[in-house]
Amino acid sequence: MKKALRGAGVALFWIGVWEALALLVGHPLLLPGPAATLTALLRLGATAAFWQNVGVTLLRVMAGFVLGVLTGTALAVGCWKWRWFDALMSPLGAVVKATPVTSFIILVILWLSRAHVPVFIAFLMVMPIVWTAVRQALMNVDANLVEMADAYRFSPMQKARYLYAPAIRPAFAAACITALGFAWKSGIAAEVIALPDLAVGRRLYDAKIYLEREELFAWTLTVILLSLALEKLLRWAMERSRGGDGYAGD
Amino acid sequence: MRAIDLTVGFPGKPVLEHLNFEWPEHGAVAVMAPSGAGKTTLLRTVAGLLPPLAGKIEGVDGKKTAFLFQEDRLLPWLSARKNVALVGGPDAAETWLQAMEIEDMDALPGKMSGGMRRRAALARALAFGGDILILDEPFKGLDQGLRERIAERIRDHAPFTLMAVHDPEEARLMGAEIWTLPIKEDIK
Image (cartoon, rainbow over the protein chains, first blue to last red):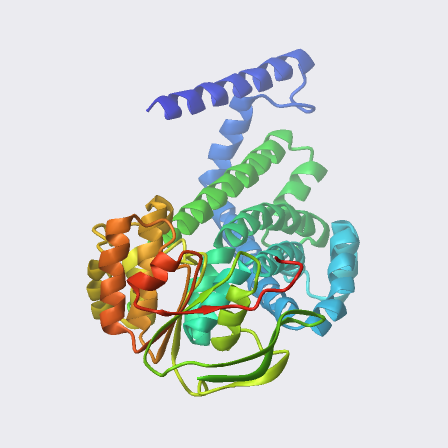
């Protein structure tokens, strides 16, 4: 209760700052206030098109995120298992991490359909984060516990389930939460540049072109709220999966 | 079990050289030497966790070996019961944790005292079973009464026990024959 009250207080403070700034600027075309933005958001929320755009964007970002997590984890396991594979893949990781996301978007537009660009970009942002974190976590698994597992003849499945999975879980969870934020932001950015038909990014672009500042802010607010909601959902899912120790008694 | 001209250690860094010994199939042998003399290295080699640098050990191939490490090496995310059950099944876990006088079997290692963790690790080694039981400083952190009771239970169960100890009293508790390691000059 106390935490909720404090959260509400913080939110009210920043809405107050926003309102004060809007009054100071005094021009809704430059900076619409919170009330105008909320009204625009409610107006948009009452339309089916709003939910279609949100749903499709959500699907694209989540598809990229899931693909990125799976590929990043597989690459991490490969790099940990085989030194030659680690050496082979490390330049790829460095290039992906160093290349600006906009360069990738512009390049990928030439190769993929507009609807698939955000998926690929979200994937590209997630994959190296998960890859690096899981690889490092696997390298850091306690060698004493690995020797114990060998001495007690753990099967490969038992090692994976009772030794490696719990050992890398904290790093994996932290990487997924960080990567989700990047997937969301980069996916929307890709939509703004690639302009697929149904997309939050497309609606942001349209609002900018047609000088609909309240709508621009309403869409931005939608992106922020969805990002926060997704992060909360992921944290909850991670926490739930940590609840049991997963031991099945075999 | 017989060692022939056995050298143990790490590549380029032998710890014990040209060992020759013969141990019985039953009973207990306590390896005694000061810290750093190579007791653990010898035990790990006998268990097959470290390959010999030279020579060989006969009579261990195909035998099942349970190893109590110097550190407890319990999986920190599993309870005492599950740590033991993972290697010996739920019934053996119940039996051996009781024999080791652990009351809270569902405690995680992080919530257990040092002595409890040691006993849980002992329970795991005993629940694993096998032909050879290797114990590296088994009674570390246990009081005298517990040592006596636990030593008696291990003695009744294990076919052949090889242990590393500092104190000859621990060897006596286990009824073990004491075997003193030849010590290198730099360790003396």
